[in-house]
Structure formats: C-alpha cells, structure tokens
Length: 289
Image (cartoon, rainbow, N blue to C red; front, side):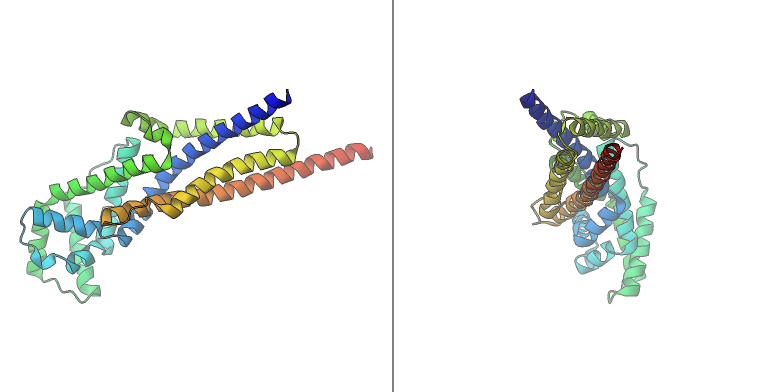
C-alpha cells in the first residue's frame, strides 16, 4: 500500500506539472501577444522599417529618399509603433485564438504615417518635405498589400514559435482548430480545476502537511523554472530583425508567466504554512482539554 501511495503521488505531481505547463503556456501567449509586449519588441528591432523598405523596393516605388535612416526613424515613431503593435497583436490573437478581428483600414495606416512624419520632423534632424510626404504616402498606399503580407508572415512566425516554445501539447496538434480549442476560456477553467483537484489529492495522500506543501509548491516551481529558462533563452536566434522581434515576444511572455509562477509558489507556501499552523493549534487545544 505504501508503494502504491508513493506511485500515486508521483503520477498526481506529473499530471499537475503538465497541466500547469499548458496553462502557463496559454498565458504566456497572452502576455507575449499583448499590445505592450509587441510595441516593446518593435522598439528593439528594425522589423517594421525592414518590411516597409522591402515593400517599396519590391514594387520599384520612387521612395529612395525614405530608405535607411529615415524609414527607421519613421517606423519607430509613436504613431507608427502604435499602429503596427495593434495590427500585429490583433493578428496574433486572430491567428492563435480564432477570434474575428476587424481588419485595420489603409486610411488608418496613412494616418499613422502622417502623424509619424510629423513627429520625425519635430523631434529629429531629418526633414521630410511636403512633396516627399505626398510621394511616400502614395507609395505606402500602393505597396499596402505587400506590407500586409510581410506583417502576416511575422504573425505566422510568432504562432509557430509560441506553440513550439510554450507547449508540446499545442505543438503536437494536427490542426489549427485544435489549438484554438486549447486556448478557449472553458479549457483554461477545466485545466485550473484539474490542478486544484490534484493539489487536494496530493495534500490528502501526503503523510504530513510539510511534505504536502513541498510537493505542491515544488511542482509549481519546476514549471516556473522551465518558463524562467525560456524567458532567459528566448528563441535562441537573433541574427535578423524578425528573429529579434520574435525573441522579444517569447521572452516577454515567458518572463511574465515565470514571475506569476514565483508569486503563485510563494502563495502556496504561505497558505500551506497557515493551514499547518491552524491544525497544530487545534491539536494543542484538544490535548489541553
């Protein structure tokens, strides 16, 4: 019976670990695809300026005056960063979760370009004349399909990277609808309920409160360390601007989850200690009577 109890405990801890890794993976995708995380990743990479410049060159658009430093400054302006962060964040959520996201209209893109040029002229040593502005805005309008295609490639890259980094279960899915199902709110609730149930069983089967606390908190700590390592390592590839961008998203998502995991572990320990002390006091009260 003792051997069966120990085997059962190890199985429960393994189930808890797997469920926690999947739940953490889901929340890591949430955090990594958030608008703030995307904006931060855009600021640390040149992916937008690369996509814009490539789109102009591919269509042989007369936008030479905007190549290089000018496009880089424009791409990193507040208006352009906000626009592309919103587009990419919404695109990732649509791609990963299956949400219906309204496509951002080209007029909003042109508005972002207009505001971005104004900021570049106002805050840098670059001066974009009104004629150059009209040429560039017309060029962006004509190259918008290729620009959108480039952004969608980035979105697909994050989807593939996230499912690979954040959970072998999701990566092993054969179709997109299955991944979307894993990401649904009901699935999250079920997984959290399973985790809570396994915690209860581990506590019941443990010989002492101390061992129960160590087993539960230790399992959560292992999952946390896995995501902490992912936050430290990232994707492992930072040779191109797209690699840098995806690397920052992965690190941001995994880092947020790792911090949450540490807080959760600490809370589990505190709750366990409080429960144990409460039981000790009740026992002392019984003996005193």
